[in-house]
Image 1 (cartoon, rainbow, N blue to C red):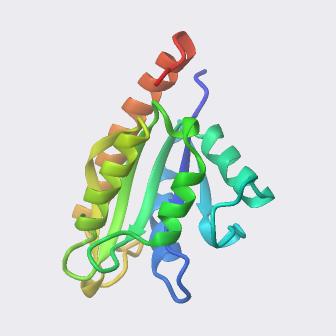
Image 2: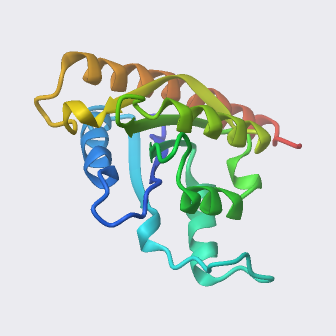
Length: 185
């Protein structure tokens, strides 16, 4: 029996009234249909990050970095604010470095009309610099059409399935590769 692929689903918005937690709940319900995935939700609102980068990591920073280190793969759930992703998400990403390396990252994005594609484009650049591998397909949600629900469109469920398939393939391949030969940047 193969060890399930550990996927950390990171909620990238910390705004009050955000849609990110509801979008994440929908996505994790899609992922729960796969017995070979172990999904953990990492909600940035649960971490008390400092306003500026400290000389020594705080307990919250260490806890976040441990979650990133434990994961085999990631799904970042991000809104698009002003054609970009939220500042707290960038801050959190920057607290880890080696922990992202040689691991796949997928995206579930949302916004109004754009479906979050500008945020994803910028996140791809950030994760490439961290030596992570971003998967091609994205789940993009236009909030003008409403938030995803269990009765959402077949297309949205299909997008989630494709993302999970790509993440699973890359996650297993890279997990095996890291075990056989540690990644060095």
